[in-house]
Length: 195
Image (cartoon, rainbow, N blue to C red; front, side, top):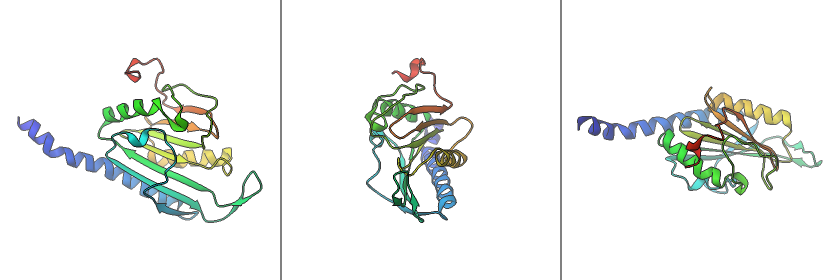
């Protein structure tokens, strides 16, 4: 009885610590980017992440990064690329896995995906880097027309350096596909992902 009362009393502090860690990581990532980007915390107009926003997260942040200097994109237009950063935190790893199962049924681009399986094309999808680690999901969405492969790799390294760990799962999404599990992909035959 005492253990249960202790756990009930201690639970808010554990949840606060989880959200505080993600807040600190996000602040560090944004600080690293602040020299090149104007950063805004927004409440709406988030990219379409499928049904992830309908899951039972305990904390969520959304930022938009707009490049300060204009650059010429592959279409020859002078633009200031915009990038979207979203973080979602869940109560525990079990709750995260449940949310991921729900999300993978209607993933980014409304595509049903199987954990651990790559897909060649997905219509109407912007490039993105998804990092799933511990109890959080971090997503950076890039511009189709302003991102080349070297820039994509730089963003992936920056994201992994802040939001990743040796156990983090990484999903990379290209412009209109592919969707690739590039780090710690789950086994597609694992029955625990099907329930």
